[in-house]
Length: 495
Ligand SMILES: [Zn+2]
Image 1 (cartoon, protein in one colour):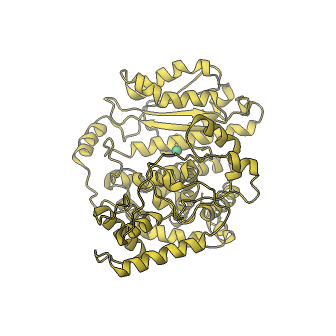
Image 2 (cartoon, protein in one colour):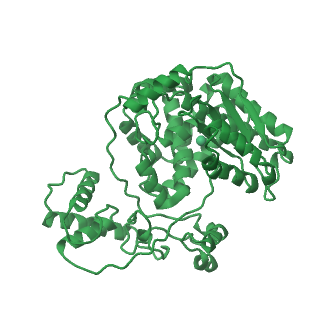
Image 3 (cartoon, helix red, strand yellow):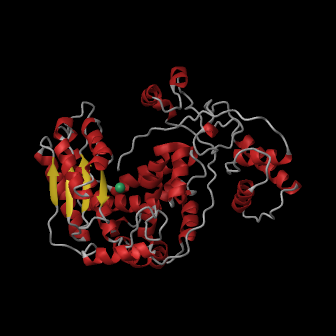
């Protein structure tokens, strides 16, 4: 999705209160949990979970854990706790225990307060905004989320993860690649893409989608076979389109499941504004693999097509088409594919997948005067600087793998995912393109990725290991914003 709703989703889990026990081990477990390391239940048993948590704690400090829980460890843990308490001692923190959430603890504060209110948040807002997942709370979320716009999270402590060092395709990935190559999945095709829409979608919007798609195909080549589904704003017209989508993308027998999944997303597009978004779907495992994307034009508060009133909004339809088509292009460059193998070397990290697609749409838009990249870069830099203040310690590294992404989601929901993948990562992508060229990023990288997986492709294309790039990105983002903007826009003539 291109646009994301800034909604903080938190799940309230009711905990059975546990007995308060105290021993050196329970103290260590408590401290580890408070610091964001999962030591498991506070039970006083020095087991695998507690040991692992200590190992993670020392890993993140850049030190080695000697496997023995002794005086030294208590001193280090105590110091870490003290540091955090001092840094975040504020009475603005939201009175809600974030550590009672699913997959907790995430929060550094002993009381579990990770977030604070906006300075000028009204008391009405504070009283009514509740973190929970029942119907009423969802309503209040929507109504009162304005006072959380400046929500400040305590320092996020990333889990150090080990990247899979085996870059050879799995047996299942190999089998699938043979089939996909045979079907010309990764080759350019002569089959023209089809654009299908509900009856209420105006002609000018269809033209704008087609323009974005054609321009992108001119640059990247025609991959497919591709069908594009444009969902309008009339819920009564959407069912036949969902049926066609499901049949095309999922096969003839998958309607029930597809209707509940992507079908539901399409219904939501039809009856909820604002739209201006889309999603892509790639049928790697179908007997005859196909490519698909779905688009919903921008709508106003009465769910009317905004482009009919403001012609400039048509650019967004072209933009979304370019973004989603880049996902089609990425999928065509993924031949080693296995269902549910989330950390495969051939799965692009989420930050790259999304920010590369968005950057492609920017570059295409800039060439065609749909958007002005320089203006966008300035907004982007300021937005990322704010994000880094609001959620300190979190970076695109945290959404490299699925496990990390889940952790980020639990911590601050779509708010963080959206900022990381469309903004933070976009700066990363622009840096990569500036250090090499747009063609290097769009063509060389994906050619390499197809054969050797993204980690090795990254190293080969950009001539540095991923880890080194992550570090250099952090150094870049610590520069004054004016310097960042200057550096990111200097290569504009090459775009
Ligand atoms: Zn996307």
